[in-house]
Image 1: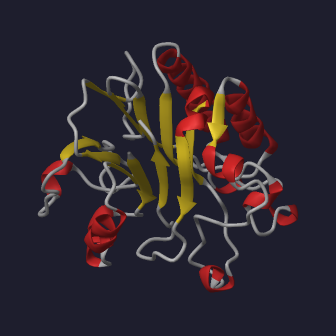
Image 2: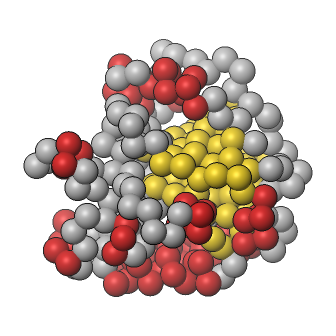
Amino acid sequence: MKFASWNVNGLRAAVRKGFFETFAQLDADIFAVQETKMKEEQKDFSFPGYHEFWNSALKPGYSGTLILARRKPLAVMRGFAGEEDDEGRVITLEYDDFFFVNTYSPNSGEGLKRLPFRMDFETRFHRHLQELDAKKPVILTGDLNVAHEEIDLKNPQNNRKNAGFTDEERERFTELLGKGFTDTFRALHPTKVQYTWWTYRFNARKRNAGWRIDYFVVSERLMEKVVESRIHDDIHGSDHCPVTLEIEL
């Protein structure tokens, strides 16, 4: 199976910038989208051959996730069991042999004003993943808004206390991996320098001054079935690029 994930920074804007060409090019069985910034009823486009699962934020033009799947899942969960997901950050699909989870993790923000909210989200989200993993293997994807190691961003020394590279955020990602999960790209490419996000400022993308904050993470027991984990940094249309995972399921 092939999975794809892309933070499009506004789906309607991405459509105007060639989203459907990329969607066809990647030809994924399941395609996860983050930061849709819209509600399903606002769309004037469709995805023939795919089931659509939306989780939109209550706040207009903010956050939001979407999963497009060729095969209908057994069940769909938005957010966490028994909890509200007002910002539309998590969707989980259940299939016979695995769970597929799409998330758009909160950004800690300027001055780290949302870091406490982010840490609370991480606590609940990790609990959710562990509960799923106890039942069947998990494939997690999305914009996790953290560069885990120094290799994962261009200027680590200048970003020590900035959102996405704080000790707290990095430690939480390390904790997740310690709970039986694997960062597929880094496991397959331990020394490869490649990024998934570039600020629109300072000609960052042209200079490749980026961060790797978009991931495919899987339950450790699935790693033996992973064929490839790729970053498609040649694809434009957002401040992020798509990532893909190929796995024998």
